[in-house]
Length: 293
Image (cartoon, rainbow, N blue to C red; front, side, top):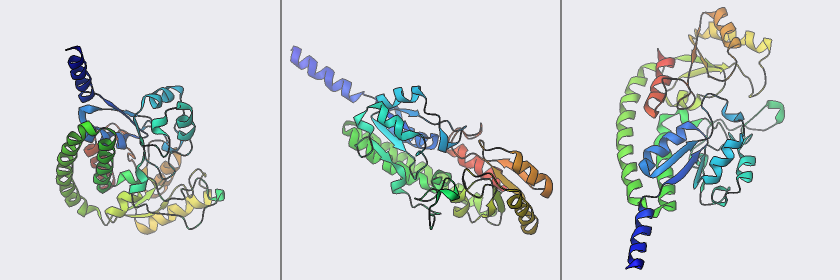
């Protein structure tokens, strides 16, 4: 009788076990929650308020990584400046690169803007391409499918649940995309200036022209000559919007706006970067509203 009771208890505990999932950024975390539902505990390591290239490797992050069963990273070199030492010092074999509990999402994304050559003289260049793919809402289904497959591998006892959650989410997201794309059709003739190439995937998806970037190369301060060139380009191309992120300095964008009459709009680069972008749907709605209106 005791053996039977023990078996029942162990079976019950496995059925209600929670999988600890760490993601490097909030959009990945939002998708993981949709697929994992109540059976996963999702922790987002990097705040959407800060530069994703330079998350401060706090000791508190080590504690989170030590408990993780799965670590999902953006990849494409975005975490290269802060994540690896944390993974190594966490001493968690489950989430080391190459382990079953390590998932690099960029391996499943068709990256754009791959540089012809790479040199430190060009600043912080991403050799694998532009890593900011989460700004394109059409990447979400791919991300959801990859996460569902990984959760099923790590937690086969709940594979049916993850499959069901995935199917439900994909159905809902396709309906959202159909409506979203119809609204974005009126925005395809827009021209914008970016601070940094955070929004290239979104702009390319919806045929919005970017005439240039305030930051010529990541991590390198724009020169006066470059700034004056942008002012002339805005006037020539009748650009009305300057896309500013939440973490770079805003002085240069405001200066250019004052000289041209263009307006500076703060656009989220991740879920939660601005107050209005607290969910996946609100994230993309906010990007659209701030670029197109």
